[in-house]
Length: 550
Image (cartoon, rainbow, N blue to C red; front, side, top):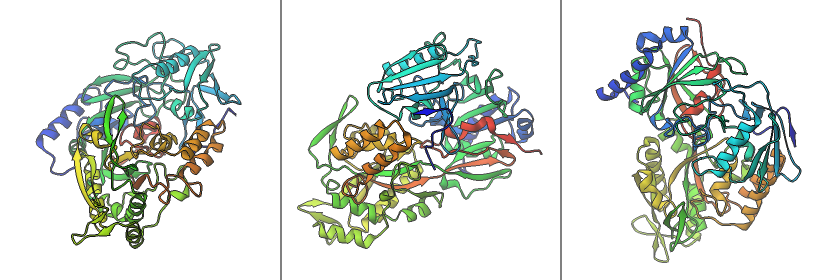
């Protein structure tokens, strides 16, 4: 397979505390010292200087700094790294397009990817970027232990010349392209301890200032090889939800994240905007009975659930949940029905869809021997239809979804206890109790990780040689479009799969829109569908943002 162009991949709060307001003022006033808009009257200054101030979730601040070899760009919440260039990237429709690469091809056996790169790119220290830097970056991730990017399938990357690099794989793996689209290239000569705090890159922006726990300031790279950014300066302030809303009310930021629970609020000079996502909320359903254990890294946790191990229970849950009611009641209509981890993506199967039918769900449970008791809770062979539903306690939307799910499932004869906790409290239960997760990526790899027998996200503890074979075949295709059929077969091939009429390993509920309060006059251009993570994906295209004339 050769590419010189594209490969088609897809056809707050009014009562905020004084303390929060002080935190907002402190963070943003640090920006105003640099010539930005540090007050409610500063928006015109921001426009005049081509600056934007973005309020981002505090959890979006990269703990290890702006280092692609750790998590910047390629971590759990993937996004374009801004400071660094990538070999390829994606356009608005999620087609692969070239960045550093001018062309690339894959060998017939799928084991060697060859990239030819531009010869006119320099790092911000003036040194040229060559294929040796690309090989260094790929090898560092593949052989290291600190990166959140998965390049375990890479055997070796080799610079054939200054403009040609070969990436040799230990198995065919076309999803390599999805990782390379967010993996920033670092300079071999300048990479070392402290790089994350003082990164040298070749991308659209340079890191001008980073005040940990408060803000990061980016300035346009004057030597960038591509189209010059329209926004010269980007100030990202890291805030919790209440502080971000207080900043909007005070007119101190130009765009701020928010959630559906605050969507009915209004602020002078701002409008609420919603962006499409593949940010899915779903409940994992353990498919095996209790009694075993499973490893998560170095930790060993109990595995199995005597209620959800019954496939009839899992199927009934899928057909008995009114997803539209969850969307209407919990997220004020800002979302779409979810049936998979990648609804609307070309690898998602229509067979994942399931119609809401509570009566059919009850009939299925009756037929499976789950008898409704006088207290309204079913039981079978002495097992009560009761389980916990864990969710992250710092996420108000997940809490509300968990409560709504518990209420709806009670109508089917289940006793569901929502339990909020920190992730450290949740993980020991991840293989034995349903958990309300957030997933979603502009890549099919999550279908693999959540459902492959040895997948690190296989919280359902599901094992199927048939499904594993389809997933392996999907990744082995040298033509991305040819892989879609195998991804779909893994979901349902007519007799077997993870779909609701099959193993029903998950109950997906909603794709949550990403909501923001945006200052009037700010144009954030065409947004790609946002993956899971209400953070950096917003600014993937910040170089194309603009201010309208006053």
